[in-house]
Image 1 (spheres, rainbow, N blue to C red):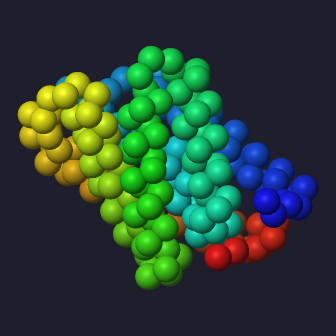
Image 2 (image 1 turned 30 degrees about the vertical axis):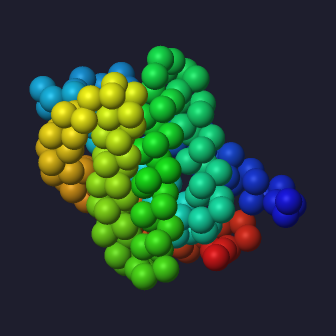
Length: 173
């Protein structure tokens, strides 16, 4: 395993703490819509930023740490939904990162949010053994477009402001 320089590891830890704090704070907010499962996903701002600023490896570690710690704090079955959604989102963003520039980060976020929703519905179908749950996917995809756009624009803003400060180790592939 490749050794991560201390400064870069510290930066990743700070981003993980920020993402986890945002995740926990958002969990305390009232629902955006009367439908279950629709939320802004503000912690994804950090994931999208990390994907473009630090690269896929650090972004994946930050996402995994946030999902595992967030699920530990939230309890219940959230880990299965968070892991499946997070993995699908990560894979979509991993592919898109090769095609998009930081100025198109919002596109990556929208498609990542949609992949996240598809992954969560897939987990729900497997866990509940109820294929009918999939009829809820179009509603979640529309919400994913809207929330992904918002979080993507936020990540793009953060990236543009922090690009003046090179992250430890710079952008990696």
